[in-house]
Structure formats: structure tokens, C-alpha cells
Image (cartoon, rainbow, N blue to C red; front, side, top):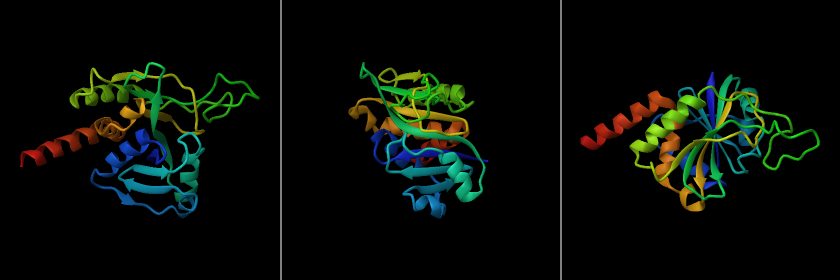
Length: 206
């Protein structure tokens, strides 16, 4: 079973965490010709698969199913990197499930998905929200950044447990490299994040 992490080059709050993620050791290109023909690059690190495309983050539906068809690997969950917007423009790091279950048949979803649909919420949303807060504090992003759990409100369509990790809420913060690093570390989970941070400290000490 593999975890898919998805980012788009069209969004700085998506591609910057992706670049931070790919600078961590262990990543290798993995062949998925049918997806590459559709403009989707892929990389592997242990049980994590990273997919990069150039469209809007809510525009590529069924990436979990498409990966399974292309590689034969079973997908356990899907994680998306994206920007967050808010009327307040307050800097924020957010986690949320996806879907538009409030829309009725015939409604046009403004940000992807299908009326009445919602992806299964990723069971790691709660633990990762706590990890996000801890990592944000350790990188001195709190109290400048608010750490929040959002409600579901957009696509893309997936069939596996899914969550979005987002940086908000304006262009200034979408481009913040320290926020991007924290999002990348969260996406690797508690064990990997701890191991990577410890290795960096040892390296700096040498």
C-alpha cells in the first residue's frame, strides 16, 4: 500500500512544499508512462509516491485510481498540497477533508468534485493536525500562523481517504519557504519528520 502526495506547479503553496519534500533523501523517479504522457511526473520514496502536474490542484480527478491502473500499486491515501484563501488574509496552515456533499444534482461545483460526493476523510487528519501545530511551533511560525482544521468544500474526486495540507492566505505567505518546509515534514508523518529533523541537527553540529 502506498501514500500518494500531489502538487501542482501552478500554485506556489503547492510546489514549494513539493520542492522541500524532494530535497529530503531517498527520492527516485519512478516510471509511470501512461501518466507521464498526461503531463504527470512521479517519484518514489519508501511507501510514498509523489505526483506533480501543471493543472489546477482540483482539476486532476481519480489520481488514486489512475496510479493503481498505471503501476499495479494499491493506494492507501491521497495528500494534496495547496494554497488556502480567506477573507481575513490571515496567515494559516490548514488541514481538511474534501468533497461537496452539500451540493445537489445539477449544481456546478465551483472548485471541482461532483455534487453530493465526498472523499473518505483521511484518518490521520487529527494526528497530523497536532503534528502540524508542533512542527509550526518548532519552526517559529506560531503565533504568526494560525493552525486550523477546515470544513470540506472542493475536489478533486478521489476514492481513497484524502486530505489537503494548505498554506494561507495571501501570495506573501503562499511563497514562504519555512511554511513550505513544515508542510513537507507533516506529509511524511511523525516518524519520518522526527528522523529528518534529528539528522539535520546532527549534520549542523558536525
